[in-house]
Image (cartoon, rainbow, N blue to C red; front, side, top):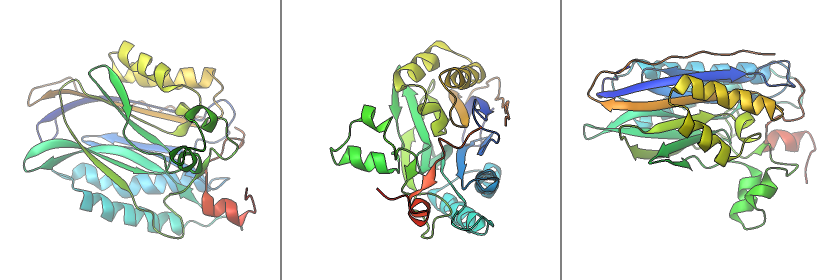
Length: 279
C-alpha cells in the first residue's frame, strides 16, 4: 500500500489469546501508515475495553495525510480520558500499554515516528540487525538501568509485569517518541509482551530474517510463542517498507482472536500498590 508520503508498505498482523487465557485483552491497529498494539490490563473485561478504547482513539490518525507528534499527543490524551472513564471493580483500574509506529514527515522527508507507553515493544530490523527501539516502562527495566538486574534475570523476576507508565493511570503518562529515517527493506515489529515473554530477541530475529512475507512472519511468531508456553495474550504486527515512490503489492491484516489464566497479567504500578502487592 502506498501512503501519501510516497512510502510503500506491506504488513501482516496476528493476535491470539494464548494457551492459558479466556479473553484476548490485546488490540491492534494496522492500515495505511498507522500501526499500533495495545495490551490491556485491569481484570475481567476491563483490559479488553481499555485496549480497544486506546486503539479507537488513535484510529483517526490513519485518515491524515501526515502525522506529527502533536497529533499523536492529542489522540493519546483522548485515549487517556477514555480509559480513565471505564468502570472497574473496586481496587482495580483499567489501563493499557500502547506502542507503535506511524509514517510521518520532517521538512517533506518521510520518517518512521515510533511511539511508546508501557512495556509492549517496537523493534526495527535493518541491514540484518534487530534493535529494540522502544524502552520498557517497567519496574524490571528500572532495575536493569540501575545495574541491579540483568536482562536474563528480568525475564523471570516476580515483578516483571509491573509497568511504570500506562494509559489510564492517575497521572497522564508521558509517551516516548523517536524519529527514524525510512529506508527500503526496513522492517518493523510491534508486539505485546506475550511474544517477548516467550521468545528471545535472537529467535525473533531469526524468524523475521527467514520469513519474507510479513503475514507469514507474524503468524509464525505468534504460533511459536504459543508453543513455548503462551502464558499471555500475543499480538504481532510486522511492517515492511517495500519501496519509496514505487508500486507494491499492498498490505494485509489477519486478526486471530482467541479466548486463559491471569498468571501473567500486566499491572500498572499504582494499581498493584492499591492492591497491597508491594515489595
